[in-house]
Length: 312
Image 1 (cartoon, rainbow, N blue to C red):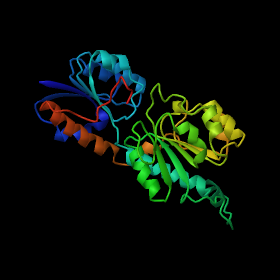
Image 2: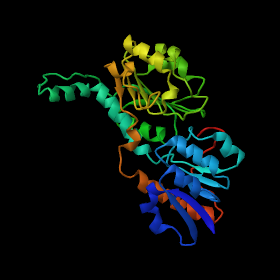
Image 3: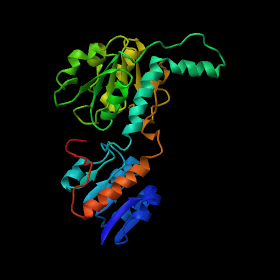
Image 4: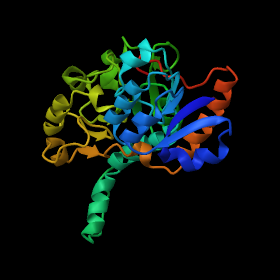
């Protein structure tokens, strides 16, 4: 009998639909997880504590397939996944829609100065002019990363008549390759980061890149905080050398209360909420898992597969 160790967070959606000939062990705490994974072939270890998830994985010595709702799994021990040849399916694309919508929201918020509109409402002050006068239409955006999220960002921005240039390895029309985009940074009004967190992307936006951007350009980061040299970003925002930054991710998270980013009016921090601004994540994840489970038992490929060697 196949043994599964699964987080109890997803139990209400999965349990009624799981085949009866499975040994399913549910857990809610790290201590329960360590017991549940003994002898488990399939695991879904998602917990709020990522360190506990990593520790649980180390204890799962018989694991063959690991599933997760997370798209980015850089907090797991890649060496364990590689050494044990564990197949990993992640949450790539599960929250892509809401994250793409968040990018549009952030850009509109900055373009129209909407934060100042909200503040005026709180003061019960009737504004007679718009605090923001930018239009998305006719602006140019550089989109770094064209995975599940990037592929949804592009058409949504194009619906606003934004000219979107994509950065990816495969060349094509409207595409810049990894060795081309830095030389053209100064042409864009928006620089959007949607890349995975890998050694290759760590610190890819540093002082040189920030200084190459237009003086009114806006950096949008919905990737990982590690993709940006945050100290360099603080410096250019303090100097108002760029137009601003919309940051759904920071380093670290949560951002400490005394961090200077909180004090900068041209920094918009959305506290990694982009993927949480929805009510269908668990429904989509459960449906995907059940579909993959049927394939796994039939010896068919599961997906989307996370490659621990590449980090995405």
